[in-house]
Image (cartoon, rainbow over all chains, first blue to last red; front, side):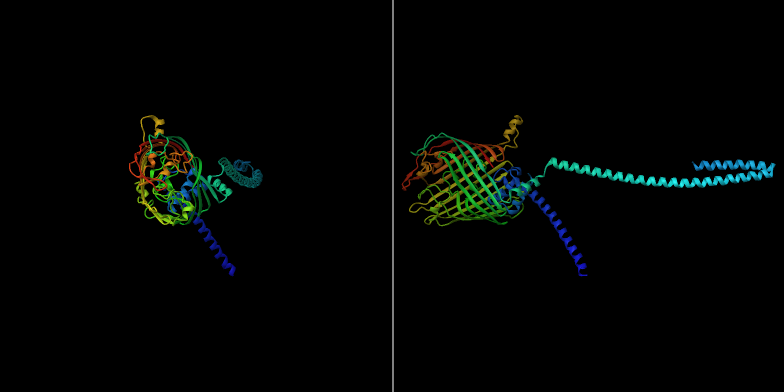
Length: 93
Length: 503
């Protein structure tokens, strides 16, 4: 009897977990798209205040990971803006 | 056999028979009875035939139904086969397309990333070849000098190593072939620790976070001019680099683009080529000097008041300080203000700074320096010379810069070269400066005109014409402390051209 009760609870919990994960994955994609859009707005401004803005196609995504860390330090770029710029540079290649 | 025809035929025959029967009965009753029996037999036979035909028809109808059913099944099977054939064709087509297109960029990137591992090494930096022409018409008093007609080369590789998403190592070498032959320097080597969104710790040898020049404007392909502004050239007002630790970060305080950032640092402090007024700044401070220094500290704040969506351009306002000890407790204090503004094709920036230094047993060594510059991209300018000419014009950026340094004293050994210029024994330029004697004047002034041709965002051919306009005054200081008033200072001109790339 206990097994009979336990099974639907487990199934329900599993379903909730799967649904939550699917929702989270969808949210991640939405966040990435939002970051990309914000990065596209920041890129011609933040980069150009020190030097000509360089397109994302100039470096690999892995290189951009390192370069953006360097730029975040030198420009003291807010972390969220730094993530947006990185998403844009890697996504616009 | 058509059963309807059979029925009609039977009825007609029966009618004929009845007609004959009536005729016969009128003539002979026996004959009539006989004919009636014959008619009845015929009727029974016809009924039997009809029953047989019905049975046959039923059987045929069953067969027709069976065949119709089989036909429907065949049609359904045929449709299913066709659908599967179409689906298979689509799948084959899709597979062919995928094979033809190869893997997606993201898939390829992920594959490469996983293949090379999670640690990333990126080699960036810049390189430049220069030509300097400086026909010096005279010297400062009797100091040695020489005209410049020289090719130079600079290579500044920047190594970025990212072992994880919160640690970065950066190291830069400055390799150059100049008047002294080849030389290599280490201006930058530090770790960055990204502790959270608002705090980054930098430890090691770093560019001085004082104004924008040292940290962001000095790289070969970023500097719009070939030479440095006077406060950062042969007689820098503040040390170019520091050994120590920084705390820094930035945050958004208003709308997007309205940011604030800070840098606080502590380091070994400044040191000088000689313990006399007017001596050049060492960078970084050697450990030998650091032993006698008290620690120095400083800070830098920047604010960006304009939101991006206002489309008013980007304005940066900054302030910097540097306080500490340089020799046996002698004090050194500096502070500065700077700005940077760009909108559309126009960019302008400027800095002003001031430093005070106490000299053991002598007068204090005070210096001020400043520069302001502006540039304008001609990318929006269309002249009636055809597309080829306009294409060239669109890549041009005319520039102008005015800079100056005020210092009461200049060390003679620094001007004459000292150990650094022992090979030539005369006045020679540091890498990337024109070498004009007027640069070493206590009150040097310079107007620089530039014309950059941008081949790509980080590839540029630069041209610069310098007009040195030093003001009179100041004092030369010998190594033994002897002071001599500076006499006549020549106005000088220099032309420089450079091809630089950033990578």
